[in-house]
Image 1 (tube, helix red, strand yellow):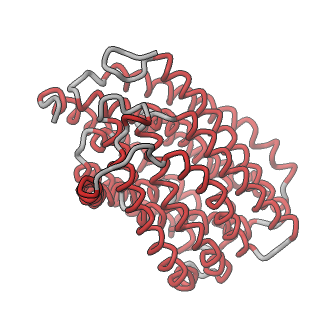
Image 2 (cartoon, helix red, strand yellow):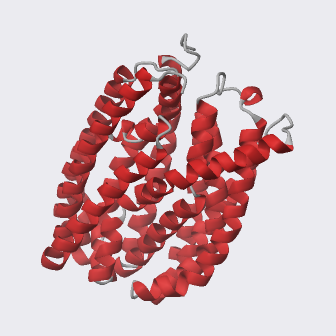
Length: 430
């Protein structure tokens, strides 16, 4: 079903959301199962290693992508008929893939060379060795991120959901193999490389454009992608780091065991965050199209925010009720120790969920530099609160600091959304 504006209407949104939630459910189930298996069979220290590799991998990948995935998503979504491959713009796609490939090669090399230093900074040999094994996967992660940006801009969200399922299934299988074989936790780095390798080939084949593009047009779009990406870079990097700052800072102040206990709670809270991110993924290209035409975005944002909050709050209550049941399956009382941490983090996340669907409004409205400034402010607040409270209260200090930072981010997202909507209405077709 298509609306008069040319973007999919409520039927399309509901179908895309259903597929996206199906992918999220698969990813959440696989991620939860893998974390639980690591905790049960390998212990809290191994769980801490896994999550530190994961956090460093995602943050480095976001930096290396250089905002190209955001640029191609916005560019494709703002074009008339952007939902169809034939009208997507071969020059936009080819230039984004070229930039992604260059960034991927540089990222893999640098990540491999810097892995020992990162492990040393975090005080964990296993983390450093694991990051080195994840270096090939990081390069593929960067290229895959650009490919998924293309699919999102083209509104091919159901295909995107299926490919995300493929990635997480392979990651889970590889991680499970490490657990069952009782290998050194450093080998979790190979699991990340395996997941990205499984995704890369089918993804690139599906986004490769059917038509040809002039060399001049490709070069022009290459410059535009890098220009947009440079202004959006801080946002992209910091948005991925934002949800994991607590884990990394706890690793600086404490040991792998404390990080493992906190990570046990944090992984559930990240699942709550992904509930809202799914809705954001679905509406982002629609927001870009509406803002490009000066349309009204408030009704869409209100529906999306209400849905995100409702699902997040219900999920948080269910998880709180299930936490005691998990305690019977793990040694070291990890579930009981993590439950108070989860309660504090979940309260802050439910507030943030109201605004997460629209927290990239500045980016969709083609204000990437302002989006970066807003996220930088959020990160500074988050780091400052964690640096203040972790030395005093440990894991509970990290939870309180992060929950307060979530509330602050929600307030900032509301102000930014109002400002962007007013600017777009005043300057349609910018």
